[in-house]
Length: 209
Image (cartoon, rainbow, N blue to C red; front, side, top):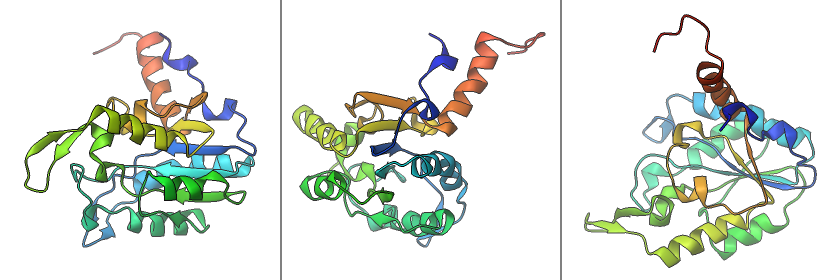
């Protein structure tokens, strides 16, 4: 399996398409303020590329912290939406959930160039497949509900882009369960894969592991 031959965003026609993009906005927070926005900045090239190439919408999904399937204000992505608006110089529509009929309706036919940020994926136990109940007891997600969660995410776009290298090793719903005909790596993911490909497929000699 060649790491350098993966389909990347620049090889996908996104014009008039709804792009659903898994990003890593798991940024450090203190008192609901972002203390380091580097992970948000790292996603900008992929987002901007989609907008510059006529995407109908870019729907961003991410996790923040470890809420274990329980919605918690301190883990809301609302502050990220504010920061992203500043960095992108464009209004961001922030939704208070990441799945369900209301989210699907907003994402079904947005105005061209719309950027939408979904609420924290991990507010739903179906994202990781496990979590905790209100009493703190460990629980496992119901298989049928996991399928419904993934089906709802899949309705939010026409093209899936994974630009969350930091969570690429996890078999979470937003990483492996979005069922769309076209899937591609974003530019941040591509950069990391290129590093690995160089080291594994064409290492410089002498090679020190």
